[in-house]
Image (cartoon, rainbow, N blue to C red; front, side, top):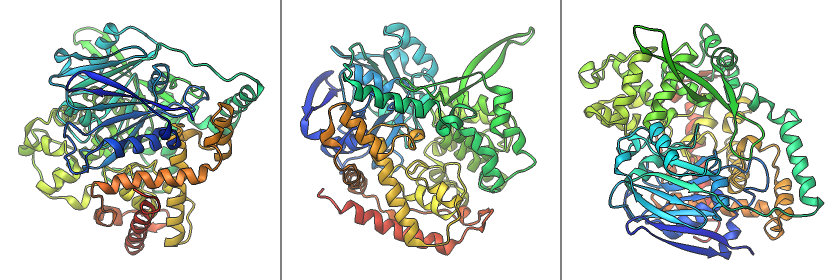
Amino acid sequence: MNPVVILEVHLDTGTARLRRLPEARAALGGSGLAATLFSQYARPTEAWDHPDQPIIFAIGPLTGYFPLMSKTVCAFVSPRHGGYAESHAGGRSALALRFAGLDALVLVGRAPRPSVVHVGAHHVSVQDAGYLWGMDALSCAKLIRRQISGSGHRSIWRIGVAGERRSPMACINVDTFRHFGRLGCGAALGAKNIKAVAVTGEEHQTLPTGKGYAALYADIFRDLTDTEMMHKYHNLGTPENLEPLDALQALPWRNLQATSKPEAIGSMSGQHFADTALLRNAACAGCPVGCVHIGFVREKFLPQDNRYLYRQVSYDYEPIFALGTMLDLRAPTEVLALLDDVEKAGLDAMSAGVALAWATEAMERGIITEAHTGLRLAFGATHVYREAITRMAEARQEFWAHLAQGADAAAQVYGGADFACVLGQEMAGYATGETFFVSQALGLRHSHLDTGAYSYDQANPPQDTAAAVRFLVGDEAERVLLTSMVACLFARKVYSRERLAQCLTAIGMGDLASDLAATARILQARRWQQRLAFGFNPTAIPIPRRFTEVVTWRGPVDAHYLAELQKAYAQAIKALAAEVPA
């Protein structure tokens, strides 16, 4: 069995060690490999920012061989909840690691001063970078690109000020337009005094010879480009979801005080974004689809003259929900301006938007005042939110320092927990019903991507706790298989379990393809073991009252069914983790 190649970088000493682990290949890669390595490196008895806690970046066995195997999985101890966490990103990250000859990069220790880690096929360095500390994430990337050659072969991951301040909302910006988003991986990197990681892939990869691999690649490429399976993602992209969810009364507005605004959705639809703000499409390396939609923000830089600069900003459904409808904005240009601000600050867009929505309602209710914030927050007040983002990223003033820890953390100080839209972390943009709320609240990543629960709700099945739990557990297993291959989840209809087995066989890893269903179940259990090892108790996760007040096209959320479903899913998670030896 081909060994997994791991580069272990000790930040405190600036030294590195290369490990080759044949036995780790059974974990496939991505999520499975990250959880396996995490079990070896992590310290469950220590705090999230202890220097010994690892940050792991892992790719998969199919990276570089097939399209859309483009993700890198980052595993770390989350400052949000102090336990095992994953975040996934694309860009050039996966191919850069592949062409550097690595399956995984593990960072341990803490650099004695702000630094940049540079990794390649034949070199590793931990370089002093105090001059970058305090710099925004966009300027940081520009400077590093000038200093480290290898355009097109290099991937640059860096944090903004929010990561330096160790905010649980801090992300890691990846190349241009991609991110390791939620649960605070940017803070984990900042706690290690690492401003950026640059990976240069200067080697090559030998592809299989023979007709079998080529024919399989052609079939997959045809499915991705010549069928309707991926058309949505290339055309309007995920913003296409805005109008249908609003029609279903499942689109959160004004801090989830409403789930539909027929009078406003026309100005916030995917089509309106395309008509008024779309510049072009982009794609991760190795992807022919081009789901990344790039808009622009324009700013006048000479008040007395018509002189403007513009910046390109990517947008998707989730950031539009969080920094748009949740804040009751009505124009794409205003949403893109906020997206540009969180991009520079290194804040996760979804968490930042939902936190600001809570703060705005808290001010409306008089729970907080301008004396706390220094700003007059109001729904729809874009210019105020722009200043608020800066203050939150910098943890400036007591109130913003509390809010930078999360909406629920701020609510513990000031009140307003009932309307803090937090399900493990700030909510994703689906007010579809009980199954989704429980799925995000208890899901391993507290992400809308843990399962397809939002689709389950939209299918409007009868209330059946056992059936819903079977769906959540079964769908998660299929997704764990995909994320262990580091497949983009948009391609889940293309990469069926059977086709993944064909792919492994085509590259000479047929020994891994024999029973992928069983492998997925083992990896699913292993991830939950890591989550539980840090004290996670799924029965104790609060679901704020706001979620029981939601009314969708199916009627009011059933609080009793919600509670029963949470209880049953929590039991299933514990049983799942016990299925394999720890």
